[in-house]
Image 1 (tube, each protein chain N blue to C red):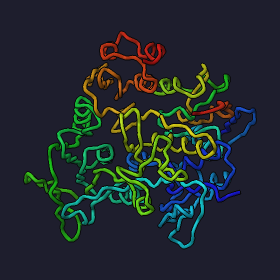
Image 2: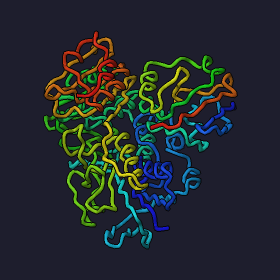
Image 3: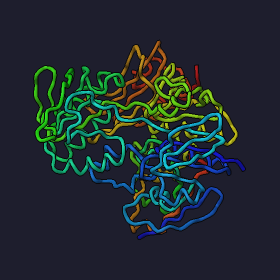
Image 4: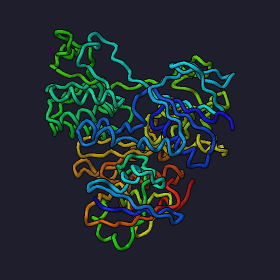
Length: 410
Length: 107
């Protein structure tokens, strides 16, 4: 028996690779290594139930600690891989020594983009990606009263909603014209702007932050380029994440917007795969190479690689889907809407039941749904099977989407 | 504390103690029941916690909401009349002895 599979990263992708390998009947050794001290856990609840106190560290674990032992997965937490030797098929770990592999899976994720502005290093400025950060943030939020969130994307908005629900005064500052720009259509951005405003969150768009002012080493105001000064005793920065490419780059693997892999999720070294938040790969739904940051992407890519390592290579072709929870609204997203040239809707914002269908050259590429879960689920099938759906049919409530899914692909 | 019996696709039964308020999905993960995957963490987005509820208990459950019904339509194993998502079944004493059958596959 050889050294088996080594998985670097104990997030959703790394965990799922290990779990799927055993589920596929793989009997070789599995080593799962990650820098974080916690055993693998779910990230989505960190900006939702965890911050709100509805979930704790144990309830967000992907599996209890006993799972790793009972499935013969050698889990090494608080351990960092410092270098990869592709030629020797070994990695060097921070605590000293080398670990060999037959197959290497890089599930190393991404890191918070830091605010490149004066005052960003003051106390009271937080980012949120890890459980460690969530624990500190939750504790700091207790005493805070005026929160400024920099970034009107998913993390910023989920945190704004949570802070508002905890009774804080919240302001969201977004650099572009609307919320979740580049991801959703204006009608969805507007829905969420109104939702947040109705709950008391102040939304400022088209606003550039020029710095954070402090007193006694602690943040006290967010300064906007237009001269406005926003009082803040806690600043939350949600301006995106950058893939952790250093390990792969230093080993000589190609990197671009992430560690580059092919449609089999393999790097140019056939024994090395990269998946999840760190990986850039060709996605037919996006119409090109992308890097997706989602639970679905991590879990489905992990399954694909596990199946390959267990003996059955197949192209990765899973449909992207995503969700965000803000206040009592769940936005469900199927497909990738970037590059759309037309949208049609079913329902409307007033009734809080709304689906937005995105088309590119008359082909349905994505659907965003609020309180229309059937549209979302059938939509996944429509997009995944390339079903023939015209904008006119999508806009017509009288046309049952279920029937279009059954008809077959173009 | 109430009991849930998980019956695997191959017919093996395992009885598990589940505190009131815990979901059938969470109890499965906690107790090492492999036939439930829970990929989305229990938020009605993935269908991988699909179970068939024993007829003696099905009507005791609060009915499924639209979100759950929509997800059951995409389950890997075709849904049946007694299909539910175990992430939506919260245990109570009234459900003591609940029997759930696990499908052959979840994805």
